[in-house]
Amino acid sequence: EAGVAQSPRYKIIEKRQSVAFWCNPISGHATLYWYQQILGQGPKLLIQFQNNGVVDDSQLPKDRFSAERLKGVDSTLKIQPAKLEDSAVYLCASSSGTGGETEAFFGQGTRLTVV
Amino acid sequence: KQEVTQIPAALSVPEGENLVLNCSFTDSAIYNLQWFRQDPGKGLTSLLLIQSSQREQTSGRLNASLDKSSGRSTLYIAASQPGDSATYLCAVPNTDKLIFGTGTRLQVFP
Image (cartoon, each protein chain N blue to C red):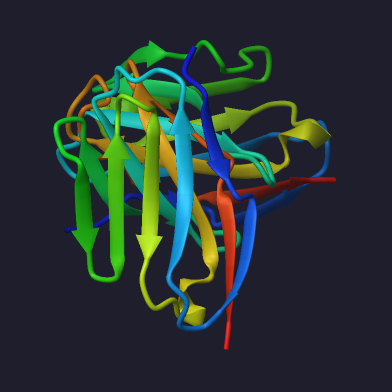
């Protein structure tokens, strides 16, 4: 079965510019996550969708970050305007269940550098 | 609040050694625990998932154990190889999201 697909793999932008990341989860997986991983740290959840509804976005900086999941499948994460501290790897993951009881599968990530 | 800690933060060993990576968590009420591998600049690859009812899981040269009561898990890597060099992360679910440790950066040299 195909894994979680993310694009682009790398992105370099100047501060105050905008950027968007795309994620296609494993087919049939109801739950989709976006994590942010700053260098040297473990990933931290930004937002979680179940189908096309938001379950948890408590850690999402909503003044600059937004995310949507169209038709309960693909998802996009946008940053506008970007700050230097947004430099990180953005990871998308999906799982078939909810409540954390099922295995999560991660994509290859998008490495964002803000200069 | 669930917190996950991994020690050591970094480990450098010669090829062929058996090694143990440690993960501890503060809230023992977990569904499962997952071990991941991350190569530099890449995403996470799931290695092993241990359900709360299990005590260990094995995949090839990897063996993960779970002791819920003490809030600990270990990842045992047998006969390490240079290709095992990567960062190893453990994670536990907290309601619907995964809480990660900061990882153990492993280097296996020939």
